Image (cartoon, one colour):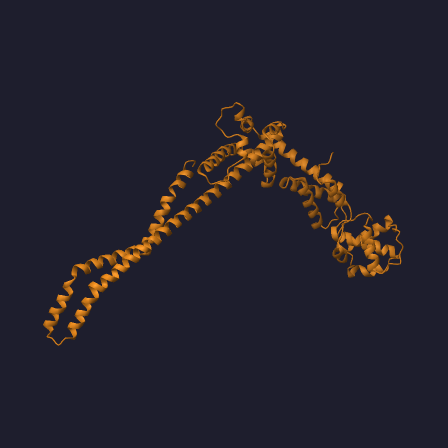
Length: 420
């Protein structure tokens, strides 16, 4: 079975080769943990001590063995660090039995183990589970590596992992194709194929085409929102028709996105040339993904439009508020003048009459004359005070704001009701 192209050549080489450390990483990974020091001192040769440090450092970094391969710079660093400068520059031989023995000691210390046949089924099942969610082989690969690490297993070679991922991806695709072949009816297939009809090629249908459905509008223009609403309703009708198949496919949102992106990035001609089960799977995923995408965009458009309407109403209300404040300021000034002319003099006359040495009857005559002198002006003043109090009340202020908001929202209501 051929392997899928998962990593690039350089990435594969980097995966199966020892890591390249900088100076700080060398100091960190090539420092012996205390649990290894006694064993390390008992090694027979300085070469084996250096090679053990190399293998241990690489394993601590990647949880992976590299069959005795190492970088010369790392070898020289350990020579200097542990005082082995007297050794020749010739590369020592790291025999297979010694490599295996050292690996066993490292694994025993960290409580890890190499992958056995019994583990391969577990790794394959994990890869299949990831393939149902992630779909992209490179993402499956790296998540599978992380799963192997958390399961306290040694990370295997690229070839073994790539073979497992390839089998898992193909197994998941075969499962999806089987659902398409077994459960998609002729009417549903025709409905999906209708998306591939190009109206520019002579078809006079008024339904949206795949080309137009790929490119929703992102602006808040009324015509653009209406177009998105129309596209969403069209896709929603297809979605509801093929819902039984969608349920059986059990597509994870990331998987739906992956297959939908293939439709979004290719033209109608290449999508139509896919073999039947692949074409219907991709179109189904496109309907699922684009339906929810348009739905989210319409919700965002609604929220933004509502906020824009509220902001516009707030601005208009503030303008009216400040204008009214100017008018109220003038009215208040007029009221103060009226108080000084029509009210305060009356109080002064009454106060003076009370201080005069007069009989009570005479005082009452003076007070009554003062009170009745500007009666009409004071009644007008009372009416103005009542009007000013009413205009400045909180209830009146809130009513004005909501009246503006109601008027501003009429266009928004008509827009979203037209497709409801």
